[in-house]
Length: 372
Image (cartoon, rainbow, N blue to C red; front, side, top):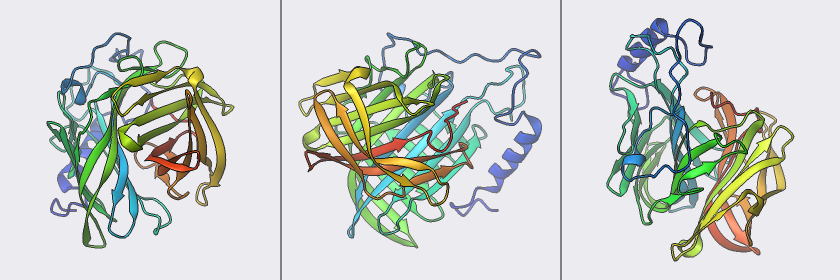
């Protein structure tokens, strides 16, 4: 391996990984809590006051964090969906290990293109321990990277560069609206237990410009996107298996986020959401105001998993039909996060008429989600 090809991990990172796994506990192995003290995770509590741009950066004391970009691109021939996600995970470790190879923070990245002509999701993934200049997530501003994969913030502008095997993305995102604090001023409950919560804000209606390259041919693209930034130490309650989520850039400048947490029987035991109107006013929905009703399922030919890819979503007195750009947008990330989920571009309709564009995420249908 060489460090000159951006599609191939560098020799330096490969050697760092090998030495690290030999010198430290493997990520995901149980920790002997009797032999040493395990560093506690920071709690999510009500009343926290988000500050920008400080909170756009990393929060390393929390267990899990993600920067999630999804959107629609207008290629000359057809519309495309895209996803770029950077995760930061803090493993449960004995904090008295002095080794520089101890995996105190893990970085994971997913990227995907939804192209109807291809017929299935085109995706890529990476994972690395933070450190040695090879991977990390900065505090105080958005900057997350693994080798040449990166998401960086400069003022109100973000840039993501993803050189993958089947595609290259080089996209710039310009913020057109202020952050939308989800839940109660950024404190987003995920279940009946008060500690089951996250800090969560969104940036809807990002203006996107850049290039996408496939088979050595680059195309200029533009479109709209949605950024979610969320961090937590206890995202799922013990009885939760996964969640359904939508983020929709509605026509006219409004934006809708809605989610529900599912139990082992597939029923909703918690939900939430927010609708920001074009005039900037925000309505936060309690669990009783959110309803996800499946309309149609799709069965994956690879995993046999059934996903409800078409929905009716009710948020307060607003109701939308959610239809996928195409059905096969299953994302296999077993090489990085150990799970398979459905994440895809969708259209929102209101009474059969176009109402907006966005993304739908369906987790826990293959197997229960384990964020530990």
